[in-house]
Image 1 (cartoon, rainbow, N blue to C red):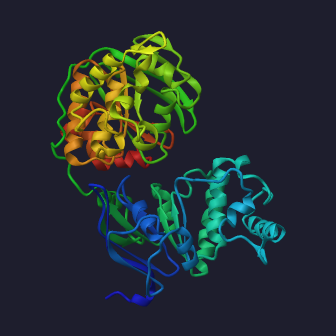
Image 2 (image 1 turned 90 degrees about the horizontal axis):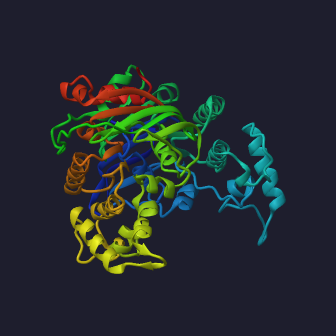
Length: 502
């Protein structure tokens, strides 16, 4: 029987859906006073979604929450902060034009009557920074800090508001070892003062070092909780995976041809010394934890981010790609993981979205051949089985799966030799997933070289001819389809490599 007085926060029966996608289903969580509890699960397991519901960024569709023994709900982060709950987000959103002091005290500024008391605010902020050993003055502009330093400011901000429960979502993702140790010292100090910490991390070593207990999530559901005493890494990985790979992916064997694209020694922001090749007709799967360097490598290959060093070859010829237009012209196209922010103009028509990167080939001088544009856009929308009343409908009106097909259609229209798919089925329903997988096989059968990044291990294992595993910016293993089919390369084996195992 659970002693309710032990717990500072509890939630029961939490449901949350986004459109047709069920993100949380009958989720529960119980946090003791003064404990550090880890939330563990694969990418997309529902950890961050639940925490955003706790601080009011999402409103649950059903379920109850209690904080300090009283019914709790928040209509936003400020209301949650006033109640005693703060959150350090994985995805930083700093205000570059604010000072450190202004950032720390944003929406809880120091005032003297109706006026802002900048002097008192700067003094208080400097005292807090000194306590953390942060070497920058409180008047430093946020834009002058590195990403790691911005992360430390977010941590300091969360701690400074005297929160009784702090949610830390991948707090060390941008920190070096020294900064991480400083954070751990802060966590231990907070714990000694009775503050509860919900700690989300993919780094298993950190969880064993700093956490008292762990709750495991899988596919938007709560699997169970364990004390860190006596639990093993393998047991936690098994709880996270918890399902068998079934033959639900329509992977067809294609003839694998010559090497189409090869990279050697690529180094850039977030990755180091990456070398691989992909052949005609091959689907090369890339997997790894959030921040492991998968997407960062592909962004650099596509010309979105700069490369520090390394070489690339396309059909045996060395190439240099400095921009996305360079990549497209050479036959390298990329479906970004965030279709709404980077893949689509949501309030433009399907025709405009599909033709956007392909306009130069359909122009004669300054004029666009509109009949050809419309005819070809209709052909590619039909090829990708986009379900819409007309290609003149806005992309915003489509389901997630059909939006994703529109993004893929515009790049297939460009006639790529190499197609990079970053999370190609994120946020789409099962039917659309199957259709996208079938299309991938069709493209490969025509000789296209496909690089697929996915956080879903069943998808990587079900669709890839080869799998490359990333860990902290480097490649940590290669697995063949034969190893997957024979059972030698299981989800546990791949996940262990993602966490740095050999």
